[in-house]
Amino acid sequence: MPKGNVPPDARLRAQHRERLHDALAHVRTAAAQDTSLRCTTLWQHVYDLDRLRETFSHLRKDGAVGVDAVHWRDYEVNLEANLLDLSSRWRRGAYHAKPVRRV
Image (cartoon, rainbow, N blue to C red; front, side, top):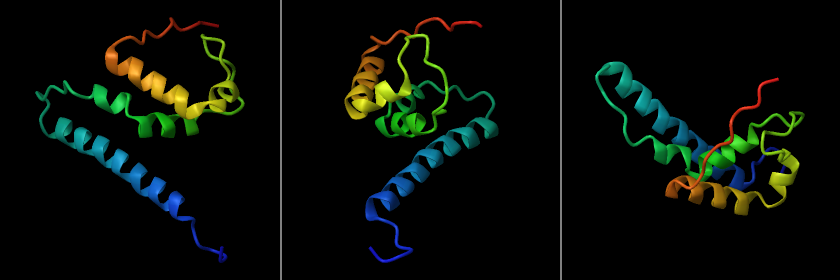
């Protein structure tokens, strides 16, 4: 690959990430313009696979395990399958987060 060229899949990921941010920017703008606006369909943004993938990529790699005792390295081994499962459980309403552990 010639020096300085970005692989095509990286460009597509970056473009899609911009669309995700644009969607949330649109929600923020609408909410700022009309304070009586009630957002009732935001949940679809939470279980969106691209958003989950992006969120996972922003995790602190030196962070401790979560309350479920799963380290990010273990979750990453089957990342796509894990994200699909998480998204599916959220969509069905079958996902229930464990209580936050206070330290």
